[in-house]
Image (cartoon, rainbow, N blue to C red; front, top):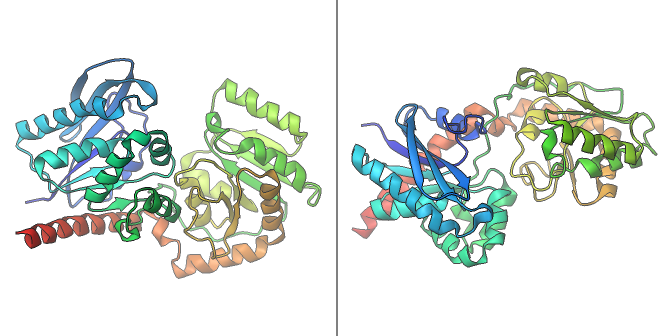
Length: 390
């Protein structure tokens, strides 16, 4: 009989909100040897009640009412867990494992479902959302620590997230197992030296604040004192408000001739476009992982990323770019200058690492294999624990 994994996720595309990120969907698709049942959560502000609609191959889209800002978060998620319990019972489903895809939200639901079914559970843990909710909800911290202790494994996408939560949740670091995020653009492109001092960045324009755009344009101005021809192309889709805001920062910084806002790149061309630049720069804060960093490295481009954000901890000592303080315009500017001065050496190092397979952990095939391994590990550890208890 095929092993059944129940997924509880607020980030799975469903008929109610079809344009959600496809990261969770891609992860599930990379483990086809298991049976997957998805409970997709959708919160509606200032409403009460819970309702559900089936979709796909045995999945359920759930709408639930709850106030914004996580007010009485745990209480409003109890009916969601109970709906899932009722659905499992009605269908006669006995899961082998539950995967909560966001620790501080989905984990509250999974914990209740697991406790009442006796099913083991694992949880993905995100440096952005989960860190923010954990810090904003001191009354739930003991609950979160209990959930973390009872989870078989916690799955952060980058080492810095594991380090933060090992301290915050008072856990042995061995409880954490790294699981990067799948990106569709994961081809390996050999680095190409760029004679012009040109940088590239890419993000959804409405997120310009958290992507550090305002400090980045100031840093370009500072770096131009050393590299007169420096330029930055920023690709991304967005609305009129973001365009006005970003253009205003460019003008205020006096870098209108250096920073250019461009439309989003077709996803199949992202890496080809990146490959032609001296480096990819994104001083985000906060940033859970940032698939675009992985796409850039696989495309042969050095990256500027933020300390304790994004991919921090994966390749810090490998010589693939610059880890900046995202709060410091001066440090971001220093990173730009460093990457231009050392472009050839950085790209030679990236080429070596590509040839050695050092970046394979960022690619779909390896992440899928890792996920399948972790599922088997979690089920095996639970079986061993059950046998020991018996």
